[in-house]
Length: 486
Image (cartoon, rainbow, N blue to C red; front, top):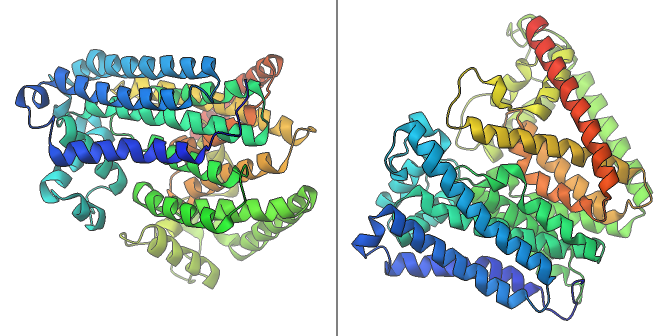
């Protein structure tokens, strides 16, 4: 069964975002559940109330879509929704809490729980300092760099109780919703019943299926999925002004979750418009020429910085000043992306890339990090790191699949812009996040998974073998470079 065009899918976007958010705002402002002490202070009952509310919203979406959606797929996603919630509860209560020697999840603190503990403490601080939701939106909050995460979880805390585990059903709800939206988006590429594999794969991505507490990427992926849906949706009259307004609003929201993602929706829209109106071969040729030109000019200007050991550069010895191009890039980096920071992070990043070969090897390490066996000690994040590793391996399969699509007859403009969208996220990971790690491109993997439309099982087996060899090769390169170069 394929998607029916008579269904106004625009309703789904509003249903997916406004319905859950409205319920959270109503519950948090009215304190209907929070005010009942024996529920909000009892972790089991508090979690149960959160679970039932999120499940109710999922059931509303299920009923709304059952006449227009592949019924078998909807049932599968519903099962995955409940399985994901159960697994994450078991992971917290039977693994993390005993490992931390905690009795309840609200004891999470920074030293043991890392980002989860920091986000939990920051959420509680946000609630105490800004009781009003409007104040949270416009208050300059500097103690956690993703205010959107704190705002969402503050609503959950105020609705059901201050237990981080209350976020689990809502994270699962968000994953289920964007899996559905990606299903609709895949139908804009090829309206085929085989698209069933796309939402299932996206729902079961390891890094998103077992998620740490207070994790922001699921909300970022939701916004990115809506972006793709809006841009690809041409069932009705193509109203670009309406799309620009919606994408601008999404950009505004993205800024609260990860600042340097704010320009992605409009940029993706502009790229789509350019590609849509020009022959694909011409676009690819122009893109390659521009890329090669930029890399050549940049390498020529910064020859000493790239190819010379940083201790021997004139920059390190204070004998030369930054060239104007690098100075502009650094200023943009600090003022636009990291406006609250001071110092030369961008230059420091480049200075630390000692020798061109090391840059090359570190980029490879970017593809395979972080693996749990790189850590000397086992900790609470080791299990989650294992799931990250599984996702990295799946990413390799996706990369081989994309390469195969590019050289095949199935390559089209929409797949091309999806690849560009993913590469933009990779670029931001390299220069925006100032860290070479796979964590920062995970939000792009569900986007790339849209290319799995009509993929054959035999191809997956072939990509699996290729990925296995690639992973082993990269590990060997990494360990050799650590031993002989670093």
